[in-house]
Image (cartoon, rainbow over all chains, first blue to last red; front, top):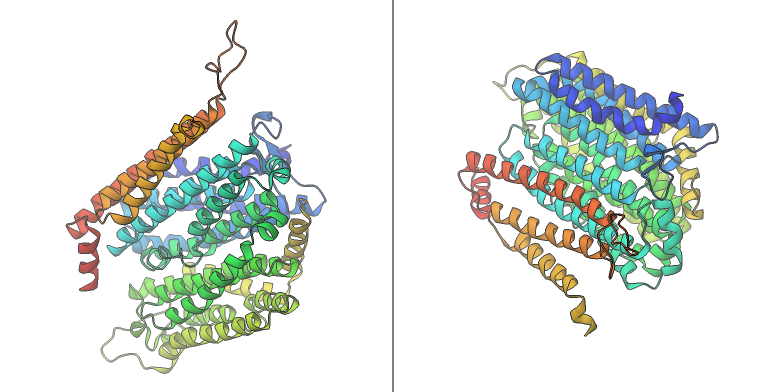
Length: 494
Length: 117
């Protein structure tokens, strides 16, 4: 039965499709093929989720080698949740890529572009589904190397330096993860995550374990762009091609957050990570610093893409803040924000990509008067922006609601107040764009701009509508996040 | 001397710190890649050292051998070496493209050119 092989196919399909995409060569075939593959991965993710809904946890033993010896893929609610959002974002962004890539990438590089995008997708899905710590490192490097390539394809020459900087910091992060996994293997003789969790439990006092923990948290922190390790992110997002910015902003850091949650909760366990190592006392100040400082910096950016990149650093702060609250509600909020932020940043960056399709690099001043000339694109930006701020009826409200609930539950009123203050800062930087686009006239002499084609609008609005839908009907997201969070705290796979 | 008996781990730590220092301190993009390589090599040695079993032979079944070294870390590190080569190649390719675009691979000069825009 094909159903039993779905966990493997989730990664193998985009991985094998990538070289085929390269062979398809120039033109539209590579794009059409990549789009079909991304839809197939979404279908697989949905099928896996429905298998979980039926009460079993799909797993796959590669080469039929049983779990602690062979590489195992394992799907629980946490990974199915992240698989759904990663493949969903890919499926929404690839149809958009056709027109946007045609505009931004030279024809001879387009097949390579889609190949790298599929490799990146395969790596990200693999990190999420694998049950093997070393396999996680390998897939992390597959997705990272592909994303360095994708960023370097930006038109501005600063894309090259941004990609280089990301390569250096990302490789240091990956090497730290490799050291951490090596030390864990040295201590336990196993790489399987479930097996590691059992064998680590009696070794809480071991210095090797403490060192491994430190290397892993810092290494994943680098990939996650945890403040103050976020220095690679603003340039990488600002100068990458529009499609890449939207894809990476919505998926890459989310998958890194997943890896952090997986290591902290499933492998090391709540008792070790928080009670013994006091990780939350590191995460809490760093998250608050990220939320406030990055939001403030975002207000003063003139490049709109860069502004949203800084906003991403702040939003990552909200997610790690959820972890730092060390409660089921806090973790639920972090997981919800992981999902919701992917939807809102995806929509915002796609809307900006549509503006870039007409205008080239998006400076704030260049957007003057666009509200009338590109009504649908700017309306998408406004709804995405409202969601980012956390206005009711949007997904942003749902995750902020749970985050504030968790802060109050922990009795940390100042933290709850800071979350609200930071939301006001988000109002400020989104308002700057709205003001320029709607309340300033188009500068005299500027060439007339028309609305972008439907091929760009439809995917953008699909994500915008998802922002509204999941803001109203929270059964799927909240249900999954709550069950997954409760399972992680209890230390059982659910 | 137990500490000296672990000399390979001392080498690992020295290489790790040396490589890490080069990555941070050097402004030259190619030298940074060299630093990354040294850092990665230290991790290769770490993995290879942990696979050694005292008195064990190579993990091939032969008559008379009772104790074998652990081959798994060696296999793992083969993968990591491949990843390291891919990273180096990509990093150097980016350095070449940067040299073409900016005419230099010195970080401060690139920064100065971006500032003057």
